[in-house]
Length: 120
Image (cartoon, rainbow, N blue to C red; front, side, top):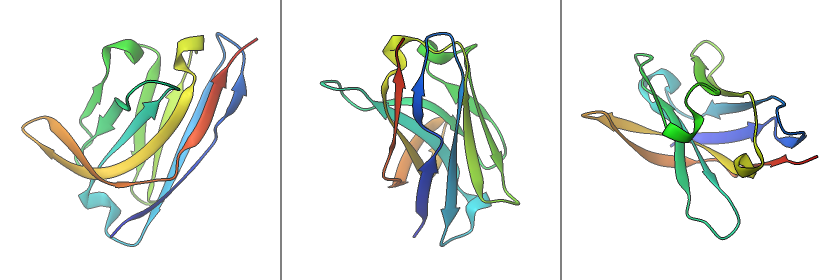
């Protein structure tokens, strides 16, 4: 079992930046792939970015060049740096832990989510 707690969400103007953090506990963090999903009102949950235990990163096309996922295994924490934010980035962002097989990331554990609102 892995417990995940997100933080860092909030209200930001278009073009601004936020950094989300996700603190993990309960198991050996370094073994897991970690990821961020998001869900906007009326839309399905979608993968934003993932990072394997070895540090390989994968991004959705709609955030490439703007968002960066990273992890600090010493702190059991994964981050999502979000730059050049747009209104369409408004969503609840969920941290998750899971496994990557043949480049496909499959989350198994979820945090409670943190709201990101991009608006002027």
